[in-house]
Amino acid sequence: MSTELLVNVAPFETRIARIENGLAEEVYIERERGLKGNIYKGRVQRVLPGIQAAFVDIGLPKAGFLYAGDVVRSGSSLELDDESSDNEEETSNESEQRHQRHIAPIDSLLREGQEILVQVSKGPIASKGPRLTSLLSLAGRYLVLLPGVQHVGIARRLEGQEERERLLDIGRRLRPENAGLIIRTVAEGHSEEELQDDLKFLTLLWKDIEKRSKDAAAGSMLHMDLKLYLRVMRDYVDDDVKKIHVDSREAYQTMKKFARRFMPEVAKRLYYYPGERPLFDVYGVENEIERALQRRVALRSGGYIVIDQTEALIAIDVNSGSFVGSRNMEETSFKTNLEAVHEIVHQLRLRNLGGIIVVDFIDMQEEENRKRLMEVLREAIKRDKSKTHVAPLSSLGLVEMARKRTRDSLGRMLLETCPRCDGTGHTRSSLTICYQLFRAIVAEGRAYPCEKLLVIAHPALIDLMLGEQSEWITRLEEFLDKEIMLKSDDNFAPEHYEVALL
Image (tube, rainbow, N blue to C red; front, side, top):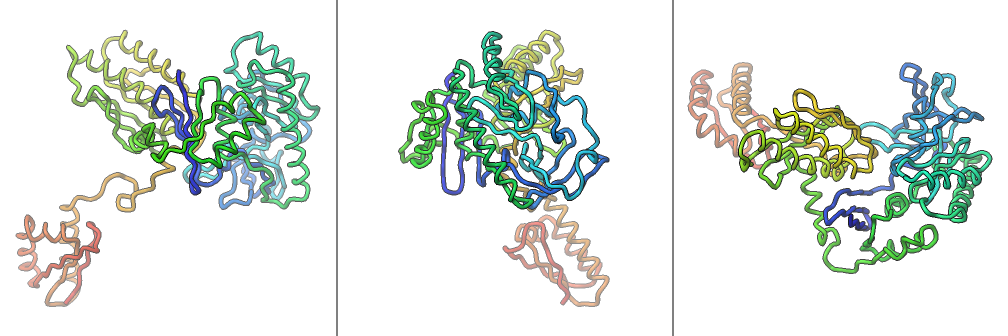
């Protein structure tokens, strides 16, 4: 598979696209420096035993959420499986949480007013504040350092039992006395000296954080993670990535310097792009982003999928549309569903949709077709680095999936709630607004003494009352025994109107 990374850097925004076989599959955007990975000296605001969690003030507008399972007891060691994280976005602090066997009551771990070092494991999403953990982790190129944890683990995606054993032996020899290690996937094939150099850098970084934490006030940030383009280099550049194109000379030089120090094998894959045509336009990324912001996505066959993102779940509906090229309905449904599978996986990655996902495939009667559809879906989902659990196809033709939510979706980052429809996607029809206005005319005309009523509204609404609904204006004048005058105003919103007494 041919994979390239495009790095588009502007003073106000950084965007990175992952191109696989000529198609943009993933997009990362950073407008302000992200919070994930940052380490803070926090103060516990509230301890809530009812939900086994605490809210911690880290100096941000919204307090962070700290679950009891993410609190490390002072002086204790965690019992963890040797297999830790297999997702480069999911650093060890999240995998440790899954493997903890016992979770103590939150009020036995924390008290209000207590100062504690915490790390952001998940940035704010929608109305929620950041998710925190006290199990700190510092990611390097080959290793992740876990201060205060007695453990050596290795990424699941690293295959080959002999290589796993070799790296685990190295990890056990290198592990500092008061810290644990996670060996990352990219460590495959690298020497003990290279891993040791990586560990030296992480150890010095942790000592600097410890030193600053002693004098820092609560709510202070002690460590900020790397810029987006450096994080992507550290976490996502593997053997599949053949080229990295950068359209900013300053960013290119920074990445080159970073690569030469920490990942020299990647330095030769960096290319500066000086072209006048925008880099994202050259590769068609802008068009893909535009498609990713649409509710309806067309399929080549003439079918389409509809994607609705709600607070509770992501609903995806598959429709055959104008596709009628097969011999019978069963074959049409099967071919449309197969085509939809690949587009759905593409859109999940591109839009970064996480949480519960429900897909309504077109009904199929033959069990062999249903079985084949699920095989293709599970195979397609393997391209996705985010962990996704796929449940069996239900009798109603629904497939439930749970995809790990790592950051805000593309839509939530680039779109805002429509002020007219309040995010529902619908507004009242012109006829509904017209009849609502008629009721207001009757109420005003009967409640207050006057000779005339002046209605001011958007031109489209005035045209409707002078045209199709003109008979009702006449009847209302007769009913109220008052003249009704109509005045259009372009400054009025289509659903806004006023009734004045004259």
